[in-house]
Image (cartoon, rainbow, N blue to C red; front, side, top):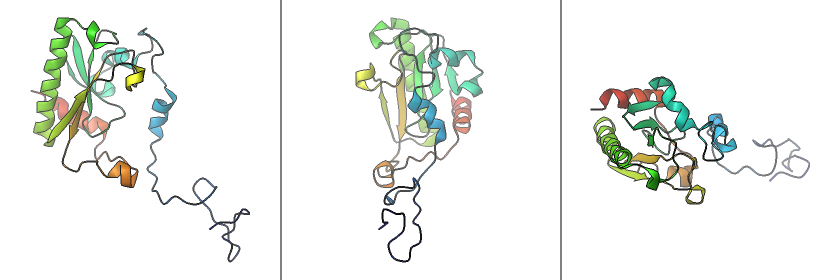
Length: 189
């Protein structure tokens, strides 16, 4: 136990902790500085305008730069820049709308079709055993970018990450996003 003067209380040597304060918590640190952009809300639209919206900007980028896996006529599939699991895709309409009820019949049908094809592709290339599929509608429901509709397609495997965030306080992503994008884009049928 460290004393207020920074020594360990026995031989006078200084105890250094990661943050320089208090007792060590026993947790490993997995540095993810790229997430600060997400935490700070950078490039997150503050209202229903599309000027700063990443989902409006992504389609103008080359597929590999924007992490676009598949483009449809009205919607596209893109890798989540802050994934919950490897292969975590977002299915987004090109049109800047916030709510699922604002989709046209054609947009809703194409979102459903791209979601089904995404699941088939993820099963084929990664042996995903299950999926979490859904939308968080509005800030109150947990939408990170509430101003632009997007549906999550999160592949799951037995024991995939169940204990890591709870016990290890770590999320594991075994593959670079650019590699995952290439794999899925090449395998999309």
